[in-house]
Image (cartoon, rainbow, N blue to C red; front, side):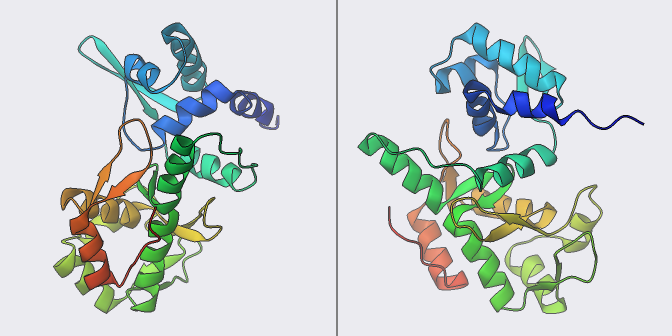
Length: 234
């Protein structure tokens, strides 16, 4: 039996342009080649070339809608790998105020594929644990489970159906090491549902062409009043 050829993946991830493309797709949404090109300084044909390689390696996937092809992260393994490697990667020096502000935005709150990362993601996890809403799981495939009182919290306060989430073909609630906080935030079906709750209620909004999440004034009040979360100001 042959061993997996990890050099293929390592070669793909060693290219700065492909990392830039993956970073854009890490917000969990699907984009066309033209949209990705607009977010970068790359040429359209260059973006197409790199997406072809990433899709062939199954790091990204593509779907056709009418005349447009939409690219997205193929599965949850890719963002987990991307976030893991970020923890061991050097941070580039900031060269402008714009870059400085963008990094502070990403550090405060961002998407990690389909869940919340950054300071906000870590503090959400800390809140859920401190309130005994989630506790350590004895299931080897999961890091946490929802307590009986936690189930009531999610279903009544956030309108999240816990039993329905458990039926999904993915992990329910696991740790994901946060590269900027150097602590764990939550990933999995439950973490995605929490992000959806925050977005649907306009407590956070997405930034165009960036994984950063903007916390609205409404969101700041909700987080402080209900989850006792106060974030570092940008």
